[in-house]
Image (cartoon, rainbow, N blue to C red):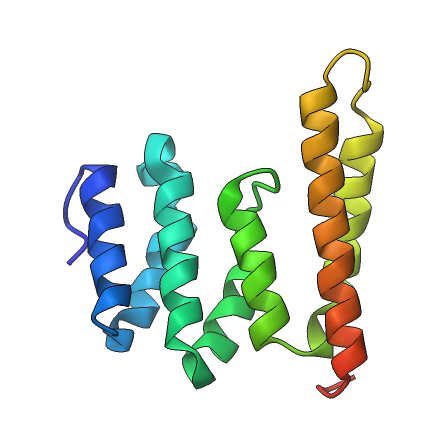
Length: 150
């Protein structure tokens, strides 16, 4: 399924996986997500975004397993679109067990935002601040829901 070398073809394959509800490929999607930056750096944000969307759409136990797996075990590119999608899926399919990880992400993104001079690069400053607000929102959503293995 993912033997194509062209990132656009891979993205389209993932989109079709979602469209046709081919949830049996979820493990391959997780692997693809984790390897996208190394194997398809130019198209990695599109590939990873499509993977998050597909896993999110599968819902149920697949999403409850896969979404935290991506958040916990993958390199983060916090200002890429896919990371915001991943955070949204985290809010829908996770519980308070991810709070410590979200707190680490919050500290890291806050540090990144603090390191950007708004006068020199307002675009990056605003991107980091937007991600920071999203992380805080997801953390609050999970806390308000409670549950999990605290």
